[in-house]
Image 1 (tube, rainbow, N blue to C red):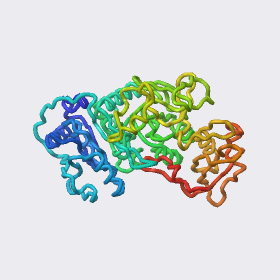
Image 2: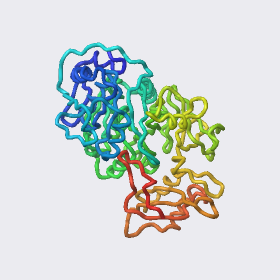
Image 3: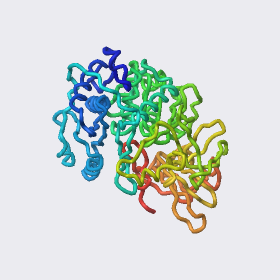
Image 4: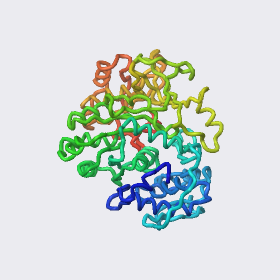
Length: 482
């Protein structure tokens, strides 16, 4: 029996996976993954061509059953990035659907076609140690090539079991999402999470509000999404009564991978009576905090630390801890617990630099903490912490304030050098009406009235769209220089 997925042995007729009109029960999944796992015996690592398909899910489960670390590959990656990942992770094989045409960067690897209809006896395998690597997931490189975060099996199980506690997640839950499967959000939480609980997942293939309404309206209980998806939901609600009804009946709506603007929180809650809850995690840490299903769904926060995870905020020195309760006391989040990665593959220097004394991982995310422990992330230390006029200012709260203005469709906030202030606040705006964008002084007053005068933008720049990555995160480093 797999300690990761006990339902593979106990519930053979229970629905496990559905992608469009293709599906597998737990028994069928056990047969297909077991057959592939037998072929993987002796491999050191397996690259997985991570398309949003049944094949990807079967391939990853097979690798975990075989005790072979999986390396999920983004099918949209360029040849240079793929070549770096293959050279760095040195997989023995690449797993993909039969007949898949793979890029040249993968041409020298042994190809194993994933047969989701394979059947045959599945043999018992010794369970790998909890510290054994389960995944090597590559992070986006901002100053260099992507780094491979090695995630041990205990990180996967501890995160999924902590979320079971926080979200009251059971085998009766049916999860809906349309997230990519090369990232921890869509793959580890969105596929392995339901399988560990003995529940099921319905993957939309491609996100659409119609798909969300259809699945939540026909028995699904949970929805995972990123802010871009929830923004589209909020925009669609006035014209889609079936979507309103479906969301109203959901047990849990979860957003992650970036901050969900408060404005979208409020629009969804007003239309459906359901609050979206947020959680906070990273590739290197999996999940750290979450709003609990039995707690207050407080917009603009990522909740409280998950069971087993320690969270602290520290000053610029990276050591001095900031006590909870001061809403102006911004510090870097550091975390410690069984959810952490073990190393950056082949990068001992980067691994050593990622940890503070005592095993605390330096996240690079800046936050404040409410007196009751709720964490409010204000942005990334490198791009979202603005030091202006002697104040430390988080970009996130200014972005939320700007999004409350009816003339603002999208907003990003950055800092740029200023001889007087040190840094001045710059607002990047996608106006609701491109022909009549809100004036800069109007937006500055709008922010000053809601937050404080020193948090108003000094410069406003208008764009047709903000640059975003596959997970919907705004890529501030890609914004044009002023």
